[in-house]
Each structure stands twice: as structure tokens, then as C-alpha cells.
Length: 281
Ligand code: AMP
Image (cartoon, rainbow, N blue to C red; front, top):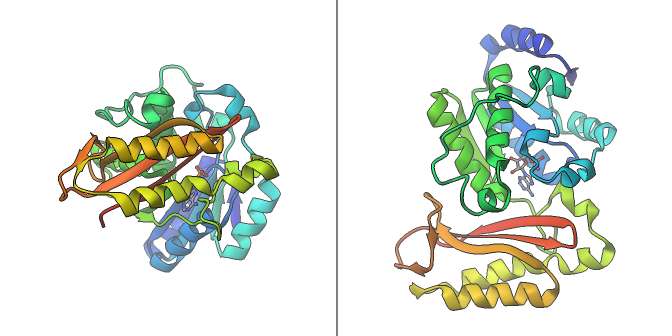
């Protein structure tokens, strides 16, 4: 695996390789786990070259404490990427990604996507995500971008980014990789105490309950039941919502036809976890 810290270096290398075959790209913020590595495996299978990036993007953290506490395990990450067969790692610093600092950065028209769910509770988050992803796409120019369903709303945001920037890049959404007890793998899981870790799988149990009990008609009772169960377990619920799986319009009732997804964000003390489940595919 070749590691590049500078844009000029990785551009030159990819420029020389591109005619040999397709480039698949996996952007990450590091603290890598099996979820990230699954994306890399898909990128490897479907392309000639697999490129990953590690950059903890300050522009997408609305809470500076969350940014400061974001786990950094770079040596282990490099080791995991080598063993997973990654060809190129892009490891830029902040100046390389934001040479002009954080002021006067472009805003993207994300419609309602950055006003609802994560967008509502983390103002500015998706603008920050778009800024870094757009910058990384300018550098790597991949044929295909690999994203995890774990961040469902982010996948829809980036699909929109690809549309509005008119890139030819395609996008693959890979299934959420879970621990054996159902907890969605996340870099933030390593910040959970043993007692928090023990109840964290309940998030997915509640989503499974929603899946099992989804019926045509009003969803308010099921939503209340799910929120109450999470609160009872000691989670602070930011949101638990049912939404149209393609538009992400929040739904308080189901017509029995629309593809649906249930999305949740909870705090356990200062650790924020998100998860989701497709309900009707
Ligand atoms: P992050 O490093 O958290 O920004 O995530 C980088 C990419 O990995 C994003 O596309 C995430 O959706 C994806 N990802 C994170 N956790 C998982 C998981 N448990 N399963 C599948 N993909 C994941």
C-alpha cells in the first residue's frame, strides 16, 4: 500500500494508473473496523484499484468536544488497510484539504435533507460532509464511491451531491456490518464503558421490533413504544422516526406500499450512536 499525504502525489499516481482499470474509493475518518473493511473489500472486488482516505473532518462536527474526542488509531488503521489489500491510502492534513481555512466554503443545496433527522440535530453537519467529500472526489476522481448504509441519510446526501455536481462517479451502498449482538459497528463504540456497551445492542433490538410490528396505518403508537423502550434502557433519544426510504420524508403513517426506513439517534452520556433499518425491501 502506498500512502500519500499530499494531493499532488496521489493525483500523479492515480493519473498514471487510471488507464489500467477502475478506481474504487472508500472515504473514512479512521478508527477502522470491519464495517470500513467491508467497503474496502467491495471496492477491491469491483475495481482494479482500491483507494481509502483517512481524514477526521473538522467541518462536519457541530460539537467541538465530539471532534476532540474522536478516536485516532492511525498505526492500527494502516496495518488493517495493508492486510485488507488496500492499494493507496490518502492521509491528508487539514491544510491540504482546507488550504483557505474554513471560511467562505461552498454551500450545497441539499433540499430538506440537511434540515431533518441528523441535519436537524447536527446543524451544518451535512454541509461539512459535502465539503470534504467533494474535495476528496476532486482529488481521487474515482469510478465508484463506497458508502455504508449505517449512515443512511449521508448516503442520500452524497447521492444528491453527485447529482448537483454532475460527476460521473457511481455510488455503492454496502450493508451495515454489526457485532454478533446486533450493535452496528462504529468508531464511537470504543468510547462506550462496559456497562454502556452491554445495553447498546438494544438500539438494534428496538429497530427490529419496529420492523416486526410495522403495519399499514398510524405509526405513532409504534414510534412511542420504541422511544419509551430506549428511554427506559437509559438512552437519551435525539430522534426515532419512520421515513420514506427514498425521499426520507418523515412519515407518521404508512400506506402499506411506500418503501420505509426507521432511523434512530441516541446518546449514552456523551457518546452519540446512530442506526437504521430498512423495513419494506
Ligand atoms: P466514518 O469513518 O464513520 O466516517 O465511516 C466511513 C464509511 O464507513 C461511511 O461510508 C460509513 O457509512 C461506513 N461505515 C461506518 N460504519 C459502518 C458499518 N458498521 N457498516 C458498514 N459501513 C460502515
